[in-house]
Image 1: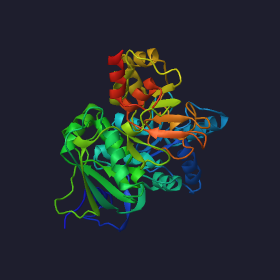
Image 2: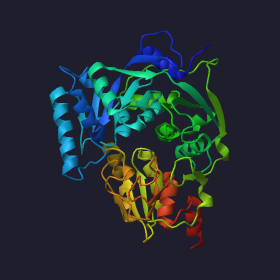
Image 3: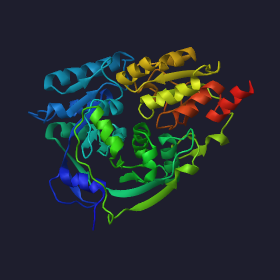
Image 4: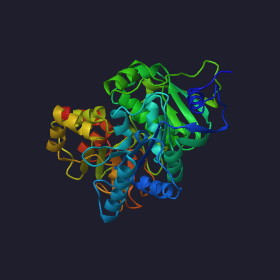
Length: 425
C-alpha cells in the first residue's frame, strides 16, 4: 500500500521508512514558532523545565504580531518578556518595524521548505502547507517542550484528498475556493485529518491563492493543509533563498479517508456569513446588506497579490461615507512593495486607513474593533461570534475583490456590481 504526503513527511521526521494513520510518534521539528500571546505562556512553561536549553536557536522563532504595535501596558510587558527570552537564548525574534504577520513573514524570510515539520503555537500554522510543508498548530505547553527537545508528539493523521479542476472565473481566487470547500465539508469535516489539495486547477492559482487555501484548512478542523510542490513553488523558494527541501507526492495507491472533487470553473465569489466559516453563500445572495467596516489584509489575504486585487477596484474610487476601510499588509516587505507600486497611494486616496502589519482586527484585539451591531466584511479567516469585537457584531469573510467592492458600495457587493455602477454613470 502506498502512502500520502503527510505520512511520507512524518516518516522522515521520526527516522522510519513508513508510518500509518493512527500511530503516535515523536517527530523532529524543523521550526518552532510562537507569537507574543502564545509565546509568553510557552516561555513560562519552558522555564519550569530544570536546566532546559533551546535545542537549536536557529529553529525557534518568536514573532510579535497579535497585539502589536503594543496596544496597552500589558501587551508591552508581554513583548518585553519575549524579547528578553529571545536575547537570553539567541532565538530568532521579530518585532515591529522588522516583522510582519508570522505566517507571511516566515516563508518570506526563506525559513520554510517543502517537507518541513513546523510546530506553531498558533492554529493557522497549517498555512505552510502552501509550500508542501507539514505545518500544524500546537498548544503553548507543547511549544515549550518542542523548544527544549526539538521534537513533538502527535498522532499520524488520515488524509482527505480534495481535487480541484478547471480554471477560476474572473473575481474568483483561493479564498473563494477554500470557503466553498469548507461550506461542503463543514467546520469539523476534516477533524484531525490532513487536507491534501491537488488537481489541474492548481496551475491556474498563484502562490497567494494557495496560501489562502492552506491557511484556512484549520477552519474545516484539519490537522494540516498540504498542496504538492510544483514549478511555482520552486520559483517562490528560489526567490527567497529557501532550501529546496524534501519534495514528495502521495502515491497512486495511497489510502484516503475521503475524496472530494470540485470544478472551480463553476465557482463564483463566495462569502461566509456569521457565525461560522461553513456558512457559505454566493455574494449575489447577500448584495445590498449594509456594512460599517471593511478590513483587507492580515494573514489570509495579506500578500502583495491580495492588495493588488483590492487596489484594482479602489483605484479612482472612494470608500462609501458610511464605511471605514482598513488595509493591513502582511509584512514590512509587502508594505514596501505595495508602496513602490503605488498601491498605498490608491488606498489613501480612496479614503482607506493603511496600517502597519498586525493581526489586531482579526481577533478583535485592536485597530479595527467592532461596536455592538456593526457589520464588517473582512478578508480574515474566522467569523465566530464576538471574534472582532462586540458579541452582537457580525463578520462576513470574503476575498479582496469583494471586500473592496463592498467598501465602495457601502454594502455587500460583487466587483461586477461596482463596475456596472461606474458604467451607468
